[in-house]
Length: 253
Length: 268
Image (cartoon, rainbow over all chains, first blue to last red):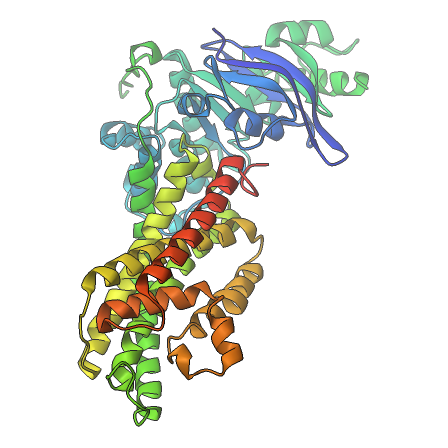
């Protein structure tokens, strides 16, 4: 059973085709990257997986559960970190996480909530109102909310957009530990060096279609632009995936 | 260096099962208005007391209604009006705020059914409406003599009326895309319908045309039936009012549940 199974999903908003027959599988335990330029359909695809939007056609399953027909079990298996920095201004961090846990029917979940807060460096902000937190702290709470029911599949929609280096490092350490513990991770990001270092497999979307889908190693090996040195920005290899991404986007119509 | 404790493997976690998220959503919605109780409960009580002081003074010499002074007649109407308006305000304001700020996504991502969603929001609206109504009653009861002829009707109409307006607020909150759309529905539909429902007068004192019009206002039946519980007397039979209220409740609940099930304006 795949962690996520997407078959021929189409979604349009009026004349705009957001998803044009997307099919892909994410296997259990994978760290999977979903890349594409703005407007490629990444967020629509994530929204379709999470039940926030309904595809015009096609099916999506999370851990074998159809996200439309068996939406309760599908959502129980899924944690989503939304791209937008949203919060409820009425509550503290702990209240936010306790309520979120309760929405999933988990009312005695304090040990796991404490562990998430400790890992995301939120413990000393537990009783602070959400309004008083900095942008980076609010982002940590968003991540914590997605993990509060310990879902086997975790989707992170640009989780490090606009956050400092410290948070990125602590976030990736925690997410990597979750992945090592068997959680499936799906990541969208515009920081391609993050995707290159973390993701075992990558799908690239353009105008609602999958234009590349392979292991990170194969993508780097097959699509390196001719004449380009293996590492153009030094030893970290940061530019490799970026160059491949630019080439694939340019080649795909 | 600090040893990092390994996480429990995902395969070793207990099997996922569906447990109701209703209690948490209900608690959250109650906490939401309770955390700003000065504004959500205190202010409407003050408004109702001002109505009583002004109208009760100006119309003190009016003829008795159902054998009681005008202030006695007015108080149950003010209590019910407060219940209805605040039940509507709770669901509608909560939803529009969550939609516009975007935090409704946390509820939409959870495995809540449309029935759980409906029950939690409407249940919390009932709690707020009934809290305000109880507060208005406890403050105004000192200003006039109030009988309790048939208390069961008081509870029936208070519960059903708050549930109906909570459901209507849910529909308005889902439908509205902007705060001014919600304010329009509140100021141009709910407010006139409650104010012109016989809160301040018996409809038998109206000219024939407006008497007929009043019978098409469902809010009139809620106020009139509620008032029957105090005086044992009303403009129409409480059974008639109850029937109208049940029909309205069925229609509005069906519409609200259909919107939630379809994800109208909530899921794209």
